[in-house]
Image 1 (tube, one colour):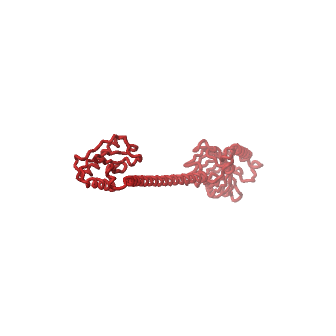
Image 2 (cartoon, rainbow, N blue to C red):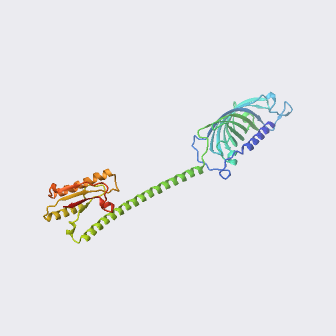
Image 3 (cartoon, rainbow, N blue to C red):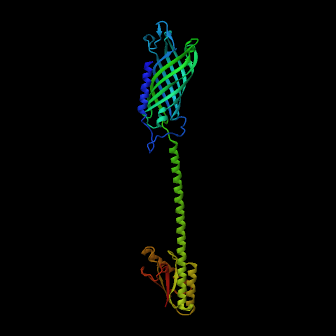
Length: 390
């Protein structure tokens, strides 16, 4: 058994050296759990291997040789065993393994070679992740386990057993690696056709392992942080949308206030003009001004009524009046070309209105605007047609 103790000691030294591979947070502290529940097909490992095994019916006496039986006796041959398994890690520290072991063993008491096989279920505890924190990319894992062997079969006998072992794994990369398995199973001697006594099966197996599907783990904290970030992003988007709506409402209110201010200014200008002349008749001794909306060449109903009223009263005096029309535009808005065109269209609009009131076209003259002159200080007052009478 000295070889077994040497192997176990080597494994413990390996664990101590690889234990320095840890997963730490920003403060240098080890991270432990929790982890998201993995899907059924995630974190599976399959393995195949072969190795050396022996059996002991301890304590026993080799009557042929006159001393304790030597399981390493050359006459007993070199017993070989094979191993197939599928291992599912439930979470980084715990897993379940389903395996089949084929054994050729030597019963030292009777110096008989026997072949048998058994199925086993193992509950594994990964010490590397348990005590030093899970770390993606860790090369070495050390996992003691408890094993149940509900089916043990030799040539003519069935039995069952239980035991314990140590599984060590060394990864080449995320998919492939090597494993070393040291296991002991205790059964009754009926497996070998003996009426009583217990029987111990010892095996050491080396082999190749392969990870299937997803082979890493996602921390719950990572998911929580992602959810918090998503909530924060949604709140920021909602705040931005609310701010945009508030700005749009403020802009609409500002535009309405500006329109109201312009309307009041026009009304004040009209009142001041009427007060300065003293009476309505005096209005007709001065040029009549009709105003247009910004960018428009058609009169509003109110301005059309104002123009008709003024012209009809001038015509009612019975004078042979000649009209001069001067269209203009706001030079602070739009291009010079557009303003020139707009002034002509506005003059044409008033021309047609006077023509409809019965004034001879020979008595209507349209004066071209220079495109630069602003008659009024207020910008909106220059969107107009000036009607002079001769």
